[in-house]
Length: 236
Image (tube, rainbow, N blue to C red; front, side):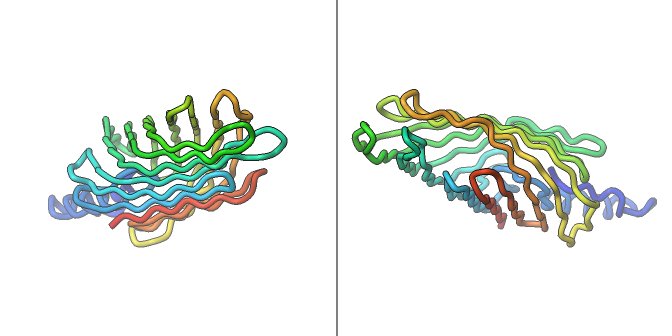
C-alpha cells in the first residue's frame, strides 16, 4: 500500500501540488509488496530458523516483474531430525489488480518461479537433483494505520516433493508517519506449513513482529517458539 499524503496537501494548492503528492505516494511503498514501481529493482531477504530465501526482481512494466530466487529450508523428519532442501530459479511477478480507495489501498498478486531443486539424502530418502515449480497468490489491504494480508504458496518438485505455506497477517501502525520519516508497525502472523507426505507435519506458528518502513526499505523483526526471524526489503 502506498502512503496517503492527502492530509499534507493544503486546500487550494492546485493541480501541481496534487500531482506531486500522487507521485510521492506511488514511490512511497508502505508494505511488503513483491515488486516495486516501473523500472525499479527490488531485493528481498527472509530468514527464519527453518528457512532462508534471497530474491531479486526488476519491474519491466507497471504490473510485471522478472527476477530470480534462491531458497533453503529444513524439512522435519522423524526423531527430531531434518532434511535439507535447496532451490534456485527464475521468477515472474504480476499484479492482478489494485483498488485505490479513498483512504486505503488493496492489491492482488500472483508470483511464480521455477528452476532446479536439490534434495539432501538421509533418514530413508536418497539425495536427488531435479526440477521444481512454485506458485503463490497474495492479497493485501492497508491504510496508513491498519494492515491485513495473506498468501498461499505451493511448491512441487520431483519424487513427490512438496512444500506449501499459508500465511495470514494483521497489525497496526503506531502513528501516521511523514513521507521522510520512519513508520513502525506491530504485526502478528499465523503461518502453516505442509511438507511431503512422508515427512513430519508442522502446526500453525504464531509470530509477533515489529516492522519499520522508510520510503524504499522495510525491516521486520519477530520471534516465535522456533526462534527469531528477519525480513528485509529494499527497492531501488
